[in-house]
Amino acid sequence: MAMWTGLIEHYRDFLPISQQTPIVTLMEGNTPLLRAKRLEALLGDRMEIYLKYEGTNPTGSFKDRGMTVAVSKALERGAWVGVCASTGNTSASAAAYCSVAGMVCAIVVPAGRIAAGKLSQALAHGAIVCPVMGSFDDALAIVRRLSDEMPVALLNSLNPDRLHGQKTCAFEICDALKDAPDFHILPVGNAGNITSHWMGYRQYRQVGRIQHLPILVGVQAAGAAPLVKGQPISNPETIATAIRIGSPARWQEAYQAKDESDGRFVAVSDDEIVNAYRYLAQKEGLFVEPASAAALAGLLSLAREGYFTETFQRRQRQHRLDRDRPVVVCVLTGHGLKDPQTALQTFPLPETLPPTPEAVKRVLKEAMGRT
Ligand code: F0G
Image 1: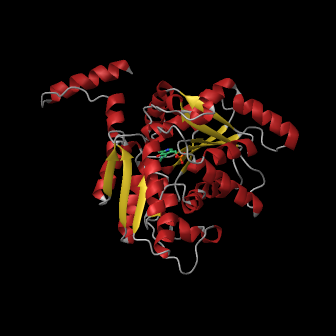
Image 2 (image 1 turned 90 degrees about the horizontal axis):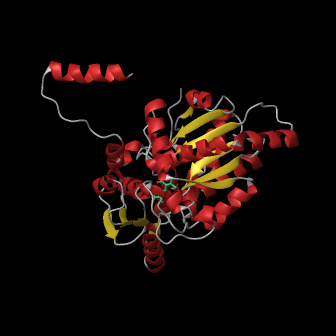
Image 3 (image 1 turned 180 degrees about the horizontal axis):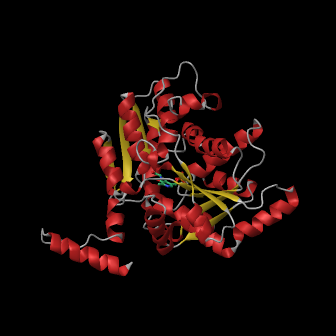
């Protein structure tokens, strides 16, 4: 088996990369696509479900896909400072890729709202960290202004290079399944990822690598669901801090992806997010962060509604598909270690025991009695 070369080398022909581009890579991409048979059984075996686990990227989230391209292109253009606003993951990734590139990285983040894992990453990689008393939306407005007025490279997904990198997630799914899935579900915050995935699917369709396009389902947290509500939210609130965003920068493109794919946006409560978070960790062996669990919460909520079966049957009649069940891919965007605080609140640490075998035996026996 040939060594994985990083996504730029692997998908070079589909990316805005030339011989002159210095490639900044941490060997991102090539993440697992896991068949979720237990989940399928739970939902009555009416769908074929896959989980795309993006937590195995080098900094623990899908942002590395976009960052390898954005930082490589910034370096090619001669930039030596990269800036971004972030709910955490973008800043962790930008900080890591800038450190490899030998660039300075400055991040603007909502103070007190970044999960501990993400903030430690940015600090460890030596980024200039600017916590501001405001929301992600305020932070984004600041870096937009900075990048207009100063010679710095903007590393948010407003930068089209980011989208090119992130669309490779769709490529990998299609390469693994030998076609597009029927449904593609992902969490939506600033809406860069849904925009990029739709780009990826359309590009693969254009060159004939897939026969059909998927239906896109974008999931938002109920307290931060501007796309579901159809209007910006001034005080977004959710346990899923990664997608705590009231006014997505790629609003229009997100609607376009939904409309063109005949998809929909759906909101899920924090309780639904925590249930999905618990399910993934305890039944599928996948520790993800709350924003990622939101995607599964959306899947579960729509499955209960009968959405997948009904929509698929309609398509089957229209297009005479040879499959008898829909293929559904749910993208799990970030690793659970990103947010240890939420983990410890959800799964509290038991009391400390005396250092004796008896004490541990007692706990074990009690637990064994419960199962
Ligand atoms: N999932 C995770 C784990 C994220 O970190 C984000 C976004 C999303 C989903 C949503 O993606 O914004 O492209 O719609 N995080 C950004 C950040 C905002 O700053 O790390 P999106």
